[in-house]
Length: 327
Image 1 (tube, rainbow, N blue to C red):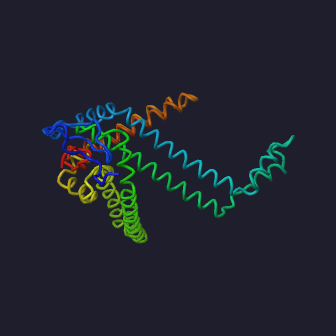
Image 2: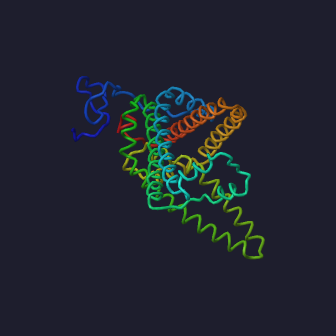
């Protein structure tokens, strides 16, 4: 197996081109060395929305394949958890099935009703092991899906068109790092929330109305300031260079252009929420509503992720050379 990592390198057959090496062999994906960075959007919010829509539409087949793989992983996690839960039922499943399939079983009968109420979950070692496995499988599936989808969108944004297989391979390789950073962020966020709640509790524990008002305004201000940055963090995390701390990079980009960033994040979220509410009207139709819900969820998820990548590019964010085709 080659020790050379996957990435874009000089094409051995054409010195004017870059060619993608998948870690084992050369692929047929090439791009000219002279290709310049895609220009930043000089338009307003409309340019971001239209650009995000075109990017998601251009890659919908690849994104659908990645989404299907991620969904399959999530379903597998649910099945694993269900197996653990069924095994932990008391009485056991066989006894329950025998009782409820008896002739004359009536949920309204006092004895049968009492039997149903006696069914409980009695967690055992197998239950906790399977629950842990299901949790890990779910987290990995969601992370790989997000990372692979982001990789595909960014490579397409730079006219590299990285294959789905290469996107999944990159996501699997980077998933331990991504999950580690997610956990660190969650710990920091938990500490911050505890501190804020403690300060708020102290403020509301006094009879001074001014402190109440200050605490409420501080919470609102913190949310307003932090939300656009939190929304965008997946871009530097999933598609940025490995030597770039994602949180620091996003703060550096957002600080001088926060109004620009906040307005666009707000509009994108309003569009996503509006489309979801409109589609929810059709989701009341049996069966068809379920299909509409799945299709809408996939489309809105793809559009939202595309908008993050386009906006990150417009902020002059740095991308992994494996995705952008340049150092």
